[in-house]
Image (cartoon, rainbow, N blue to C red; front, side, top):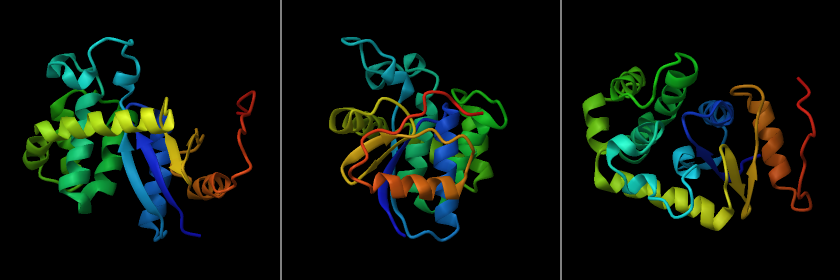
Length: 195
């Protein structure tokens, strides 16, 4: 059954990788979902109230995940046909290859593996409007949906933080999407992790 939803991401989070990989695989397998991939900066999430937001800081003081988000936004917004593959490659750089996603050379290699021109992506990533997109989407997720982490799924006007234990498990995603459509369910949280 097709679903319409938003899923948040930050490339540094393994649970965001698990959930986003499931969404990407579902779409690549032909699922007819209407999906919006929205950035949520874990670096900004750890900024104390009243401190300068990461998007207003010099590039070398923004935190370890912001540049990767800018690369992701650049591909999503300027090279959309390559986004799904690039999205997985950016996650893989951090979690499968154990590379530092604050390093632009790492990000350039990741987008090249996904079939993108790394120079074109880097140029788009460094545009002021790309940084403005990061600020707008993160702020929207917090102010409109009280998002506090990744991955958060927003469906039917409600946001739900979900941690999938397996990477890219489409069956788990479909099960969760069906639960998100269940309007009488407010909270379902295990008190311990059964693994």
